[in-house]
Length: 280
Image (cartoon, rainbow, N blue to C red):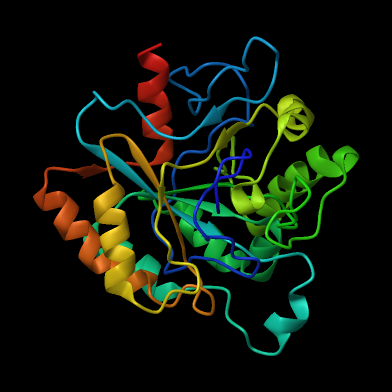
């Protein structure tokens, strides 16, 4: 969701649900548990904590490493939205994932643990498809700072537990390959939040291109915003929920061929982080 380290970011705060799903695909080899060490051939790449020991923050890959771009999709569902799901509100978007598969577009899905509890078969399907990788978007989708787009707030002493609870939910759903990456709900974070998450070993992943797809109905406007913002190494934040981002799938059908025509290659966030680590 929206970048905010006391920086601005466009209105992308979906306090509701954002998701992905689709038919099962071939299994991937499982990665070890999240770690804060630098990349090795057997581990997902992460960034090392900074000199002050805070959780590292990644917003984009190298600008000089070819025309690569990562599409990311926030699968949001807050901890208290079960009643809405029970009444029939859909926090998934199977057609979006089907389109990404049809277009052969790698992508990173930042999933809340609450969503994985609601849609375990879909979470497992995404995890087993080598096109995709699942990363952590908290369990509750509550904010890690105050004043974050109206989201409830996680107390400082519960921040680490909320992240770990999401990984536990992934395991319950049968996800064996969750990445050691974390996206703050609403994109809101501060020094306190970064310090609280240091023991988890995650790399915080933000973005440099806001799609504006949250609650948007004009797919062409979403596509234009992405196409105008992408640069080599960009991380694009989008959403995949039927109820809160209804135009995203149509926008993707325009974005992908136009970026490919400009020479861009789609990669997952892990590939951008690996490239960044190699250039340090």
